[in-house]
Length: 416
Length: 125
Image: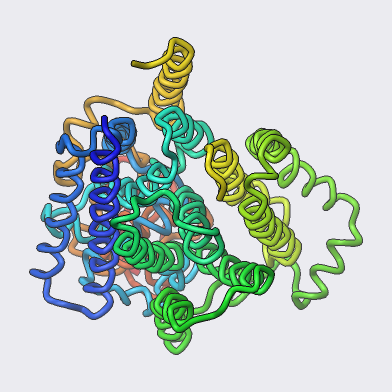
């Protein structure tokens, strides 16, 4: 394969990735503005057409592994029933509500508040549109739209991994670390995948020295595509789950920090980039809170195990030695976390010099998110043991995938 | 032409991916070709995803054209039953002031019996 054809494939991949992400966002947007059903159906059909085009087109031969990866996940998803607790009670229940009520904001009536009515609903809205197109609901197919959401984020990750070995290695690690949570209807796997993609795109756009992965001729056009992709990925991440919003905020803070550190200028482009990313989630949160629907994890509306205030809860838990053991078990002695740390440590020792900035960026984001997890668990209004047991292994996947991806990326020849 | 060492690496990576997919399919999510082939059929998968009593409870509600319902004390305290019936029976809603009450068949109730199935009864209180 010659260089020209490779660049052509890359540019086309960027465009298809952009179009798929746009269709995913537009689906949410049409629900959010209560647009005509016809528009939602046309948009969803375009999404399916784009994905099918990617799968069958010979122009993307270089990405055959991703096609197989995507199809395998889709087959597994369509060949298994929806049994997972959170997937049923939170995500697919809200998808069913959108489908039946024909309204994205149906949950604001606060029916069953324990089922997290304040969560943003980009993933359920996609399931609801598919159910509308099919014409009925069942316990199998609605969750499969999560796999459609995975595709653009994984495409952009593989786009930046030039070597096929590395592409396949990354797909293998996604399967090893987060295979099941991508299939079972939860959104934690999606959050982790989008965390990686957002860090990657934002680093390349605002912190990395240059976009040296592109052909000179198309450099300007491709940068614009990646800029819009960054906005779309950011929007999707913030609308996936509250954790996504927090993660995006961490990336925002770290981007400002690193721009200051590298003495980069701030432009209107930066301003609009972040405004576009945060606008949809701010509108969602505003509508939820004005409707009296609050995020329960902070403690609203929960019959708390601890009746004390947030700071009192933290202090009480910090003074109890048993909590340290619990945290050690769940947030440190997690086998996937340890493996990713070993991989990252190895990559760090081998490649730190040629990828100094990217390592610093990843470490900064990981550490802030990791310590935020400690804060969340120490301040939880639930029983800390129950909370850690039910969610720590899922939320750690975001850090696990982030460390692993950037370790693989660092082994590529060029300086970042 | 691919180097021999690369070929080995590819082979190992592909084998690991395939093994992992098989492991996820058969031991983590109970993949079944039957489910795959029927994945777009109306209401398919209820009997796989839910326990018999949940399906029975929804049947009681639909047969009696109930729009909202309440649960007896013992069913209300059963977290699994409550959560599942809420999401499975939607748009029929759980409402603690509803006159239609679902109860276990072997528990006595002073309300008027409307309907019964193998494990559950529907009362009007």
